Image (cartoon, rainbow, N blue to C red; front, side, top):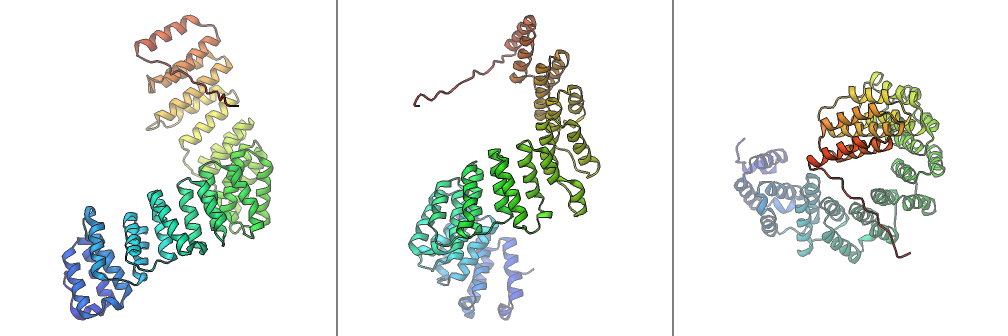
Length: 445
């Protein structure tokens, strides 16, 4: 495509878009400048916010990254823009493209040039601030929001909460939540995300409890966060209340929300209520509803079976996952299965699983499983299998001190002092040393 555009084509939006796209692809800054001169002489530039936006974005894509911000500032000054609409589109596009620094630079230019900053520009900018984790710029934006009165906007308020939550500043996020005059479910969910990331489970539950008093409805995300908090606290009583809330509120598309169902299964499984977890999982009903259980659902149920000692049920679920649903078992699934068998003292079956699982590129995980088997052999007194497990682990990681320590513990538990001396001598020759353990005692109480 030619980098020239005829004068009469300036009025053709399609031709203009094609031309600017070509300039962007070829990094033809000279053509962009010539185009700007054309539209300026034609008197079209200041009557078309859409053209202003396209021109600035094309210009930014053509400039060398090292000089983008300074060059963009000079270009903004030449344009003499005062209409906030093209700036809003520019900031939004920069934010979506991952050019977060340019989005914040554009907001700064608007502020210093007295261009009106509305909620749209603030929300897009706060999204970029969150991605960059730029606490300083975010707090300056917060100060501007307070000063300009935009805290009354529920959209700006939720964007501020999301910013602080993503920086794990949950106290600041909670403070903003309490200060904003208008709240919605999005604001709650943003704060719940922060509580989940910092494992502040009790605060998350308390926030969900406040929602009816605030007149706010719950959605799938809210209930998912509440279930994660119940799992974190291992409280089945609260978990059942959340489950009842799921049913009572008739959450839209719950039957097809595999993530929400997986969290319910995980909550019951972690609390040791495998029967309840199985009822939620209920593959037959899921299949009838046209839902295919995913890898996470199977992982949670197999793990729950391990905590309650239901070996055969766990094995059936594992086999069904690969055979009936054609899902590929990951290292996490194999680890759960080995843990299930080791807890049930079915060491031979656990050994066979580790032996037959694919190890390529996952040697570290295999070592961990052989270590789990070795630990189980120590508890069960199976010295022969324990030595074999240690040998297989050390073949993969010869310098793994943890395996040597587990093997020493097994020998010590069976009074095999000569073997312990040989093992210590071997560690000494290889330059291996067990890290010293540390304890912390708080003397202030």
